[in-house]
Length: 352
Image (cartoon, rainbow, N blue to C red; front, top):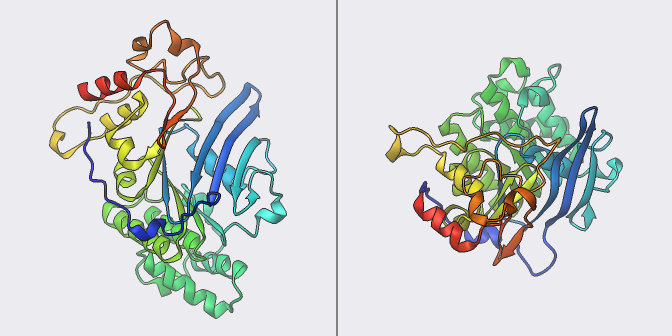
């Protein structure tokens, strides 16, 4: 199995954890989209919680429901055809049922989001600096001069050169990576208590990736904020996350502390993700991808949603993987949705 360097989070990261209700608690979150071809089950019964100062990594293939989950938490599906049910309790308020008039003040100030596509998120008719300063003015009692200074400072902190000059330029003057950094600056400028980052470093080179991750960690430590990091990069997850949630077919198939997910993996899909990663000591060998394709969200299988791609489904016996949907079982904070027993998983993991 891929061996990754997992660094321990600083003790201060969990200083805000208490025995009270979690800072963010999501229960049975479900998102369905009615279409002409049927109902798309994008998210199916998601459960997770997050404390202040902690980072939760959400991983999985494209189409697994990661971004839809974040959009539901931000209230961005309100007013659409999407059917969102369940609960998402944030500071005593349910983000699922909260009306748009109450949700709007939370966005940016209390909950920030870094979107995956900066080109569509930035308005082409306004300068980049104006858009960042506007986000600051909406949630702070400040003058335009103060907002400009805050925006210029944040542009510099996310690694944009000559921020004073770049403030007055338009999105089309920025490269893809610079637009992504501008989006990160916009999300961070109000220092939100909860930050949802959807592939925040996808368009950036590794040097800038490290800079941005360090910046988010620095602000997280300063404000004791919570972070949900949606990414395909398991190396990033290993470095910055406290807990990991693995999604497949709109469901959580495994969740737990980051070191347990990487070194005590309990689900064949997670094993497949880890074993499909390239490593320095196997640079000349071929990658080992997961066979097959993810299931259609219009017609999910009756049994385990991963059974058609799982190389070990027959080990469970009696065709149970194809006929029965496994429940998410949690033991000592480590959850898995699989019919295979613990000893069977250990045997599979050790044979890889």
